[in-house]
Length: 230
Image (cartoon, rainbow, N blue to C red; front, side, top):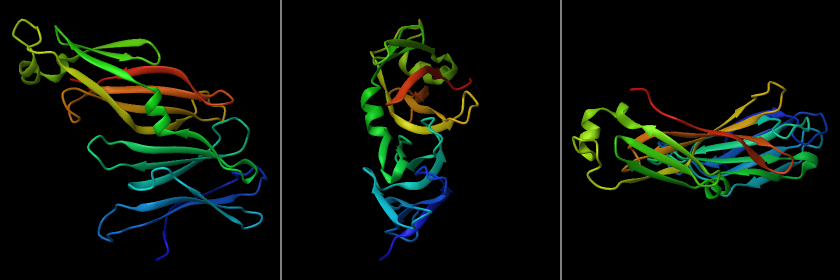
């Protein structure tokens, strides 16, 4: 059974100044479900009409989409593929490819990102949580009193001390967004990672990491922690 087209974009991705057709194909095992598998990135050269398939490491999920934009500053569009995992962690699978001169080159892979950025999340007395970004050697402290008295009473004594030690965790990428911070036509990246407390759905904020291409890789511009309003 042939695959279906899931998303399509047009733009010059090989550098010959002729728009190419970039699209995703896949299969729906259950026509009643939005789940798709065997997702493949396809590029049709606008000049020769030759087609180039690029397999993806993780090729199943929900809502696969494309974005074309220049991430490296060479004046040629690169290709971003985003796929929702559909799990409780709200993870996304993310890939960015260059296709200069019809040669695919992987610029970004969510698995490599998640392996590099490691964290410790520790609850402290007096309603504080430390989020330690081990890769960047930064510590962010969140005041979780905004979570409300019912939540706090479950884990803190009336004097503000912890009833028991609690370690949270930071999940993998749950969104990777192209942002032109410099407004110069070259896109940077803003990665979101959820900060979880006692379990996955116990979200206490997000780690936001801004990345910029440095000629060989996406390097960190800055990193922040965002919290929900109380």
